[in-house]
Length: 250
Image 1 (cartoon, rainbow, N blue to C red):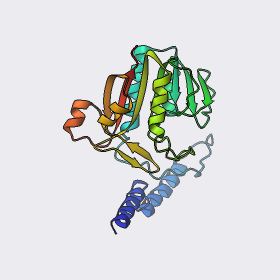
Image 2 (tube, helix red, strand yellow):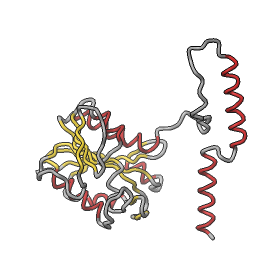
Image 3 (cartoon, one colour):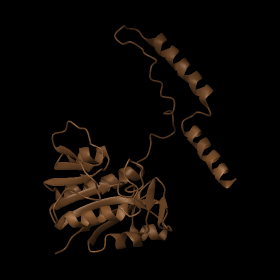
Image 4 (cartoon, rainbow, N blue to C red):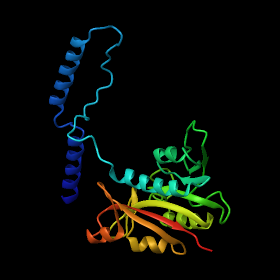
């Protein structure tokens, strides 16, 4: 019964977000606006085509940054401060990769090829659990909202309970001495595998998984801001994206 109620609640929230519950009113406004637009047209330079109705964009807010934007901007800030000649990125968002490519060469590694015409981006097929690089050879490495999925089959990869740790061990292996790793993934009050979506880790688990590296910076991206570890602990560790900058010492 509890699971059924949760499913119904989530479905209703989805419909509400997409204005499906209020659809008659939305469609009525759409047709009224279309009629008014045609009526006020005083030239023949544009063809008015009602082929792409956007019914869920009439909101009270223009949007917010959200966790992805906070984590990407956090990582971008660190890249700008170092300006590495080359960045190896493991399957981060296309937005982050494209912005990073404005000032450095980016080699994108993913199980799915990243298609782009940008000359500063080189895309190659690769497995995060077996990176195609030699030991201590990569000076700058990033992977944002990726490694928490590895081994859960969500993106066509093989199921592997230890997939996340194997990917971390590979990053530690290929990272050059004094190099940088920028990673972000879900964190919270307890360690949990939300199959087949992602994993959630406690900060303490993160420190153990990246044992052997030195932590340079640590932030926590909420839906409305990014905060320090001290602030995160103070608000009782809600679901967020932990943002971590590690380096390898000799």
